[in-house]
Length: 442
Ligand SMILES: Cc1ncc(COP(=O)(O)O)c(C=O)c1O
Image (cartoon, rainbow, N blue to C red; front, side, top):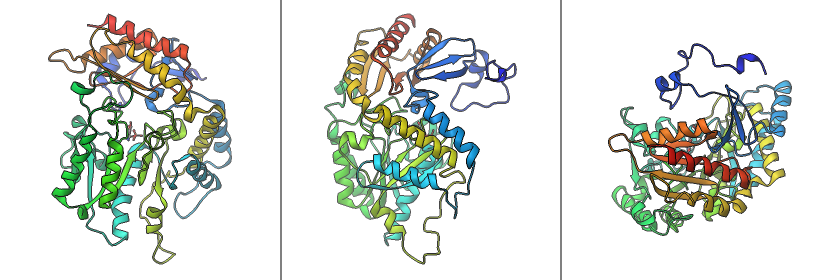
């Protein structure tokens, strides 16, 4: 490794960091310089156990050989090919391989470069689909409170995280929101999906009654909401949403950017819950986070509705310069190979009970007011410090990093989502770090 990559630069001012407390960070920087499997190495040479798969994306663990080699070879062979009106073989191969692992019925794939772009793509597809079928009045989009669908204007409009919306003026019109499903008074310390709250899906009927189904294009939800601090769908909730959407001809979009590619112990949340959406947005795990990539899966009927009109005409006026970039495709193929060789898309299923027990052993530790889990996802909600929300969880994050574990916090919630290669011993280690951290913070 070149020395340039190993040391903290003296001047950190030029880089405006995303979703970061810049001034605080620059006073006490936290730098990773390398990674392997379950660990990062910091600029001062410490190993840090990755409890969050980077940002919920490094599902196969770090610097995996098949992915690294695929990228190296592809970079030397075909670095870039225009994404519009030209093709290259591996993007077609990748689409076929993705359809093979996707829930049955998700027959076509549109490539993007991130979760945010996948969401914008899905929303546009939904509206254009209805228009293509002569239902051009169906333009409304329904999201959910506390939902996270990336940071672009469509995504923050259907999203429901206040801090991500309030600074940015007028968002998309014609958007409504269902209530979130976080009911701690009824469901605190549930193991897996909670018992109470499926009836909240009926709020969609109320919204349909208000606007009329003929004006609504799509409903978008995260099957398990991640960024807001892990909110699970109550038992039967997603099934109800599916039924209501089908009844009214509304498309159901699952935003599987974090649940896709094995996080719940099944390839996708749609498989886990036995509910198939019409459109599914993914990113992150599709390429193990190594090269930016997103993929939007759609049912045949949706794709086919666009394939009309003169054959020389572009059917969907949408796409990105880097849609299906060859090196990203190579990374994704190397990722799929690694998932397959090691059974990672379903490994979470056998580890989930162990993970659940380890996580719930934190009940009774200082500050803990709820624990939630599903697949290889865990959340530990802390009581906020009066008058200083988020401060306690942020202290936990910094303390954990100093002890040797990467955790993630959002609000006063610690969210855990380790790479799917984690061992039982490493689960113990991660939870012990969290336990010690909770005992050490105010
Ligand atoms: C459900 C969901 N959708 C969309 C996104 C946005 O993805 P990206 O940061 O790649 O744009 C995220 C990112 O965490 C996500 O969790």
